[in-house]
Image (cartoon, rainbow, N blue to C red; front, side, top):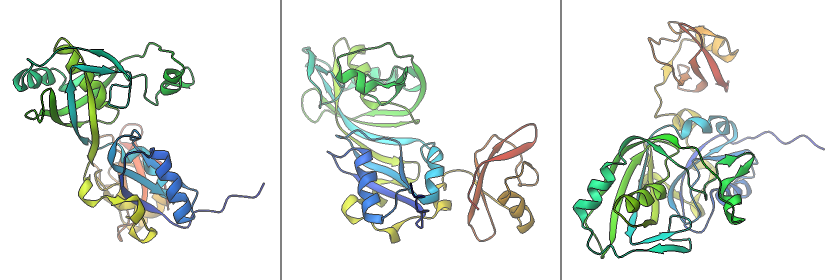
Length: 295
């Protein structure tokens, strides 16, 4: 078997994913269009969901774990009175309730209970693995398993005035790993009935917003942002030429050498020209070591 051709294109692109495509579909499209195999995405969007999807090309695929760290912002519609098998409008109806008497103030009060640091049970239609099987694969087979609750943070959960009876627009700002459709389901249950989510759209991942996202048909290699720009939401440090040489060799360094005074990282390390050399994280005591070296 021949050795895979090394990537020649490196950077990050902000895609406005359309409905009807999986996140992996978008990756496949870029692989064909860019002529590169080394492409991946950060933060999966469901096929029916739209909005901001970050894709790394070439060396930036090694940085994907950091691209999902900043808070994410979503919009959608909370639909009261109907629960579905997928917790969103793509699933089969599993229950109905008359919730016409529930008003905006009550929905907002219920949403408040799911704001802050909470424990959330992942839905069965998620991509999380349990005993080596993805939950959505088990769900398709009609199998439901116990899922441990996971800590997530909901920074903001806003509810707007109803656009139609029982339909409330919502905006959520949350940590990575938060399921917005689970929040919709939780609110419905808290109000004594059921609910599901419609029209999920991710409008931002950190400073990467929908206003700068590119439709999939307009993606071109010359529109990529640099590896350094990919990590612009993390606190970066610029080092001298001498320290840059040590960084390039992946050496463990004192925090003081890197110009850092505290914290655990991750810290993008740049040279004087603004080129991303590596990403460092706290090691032992007052030292840091690279988790990724690009130079």
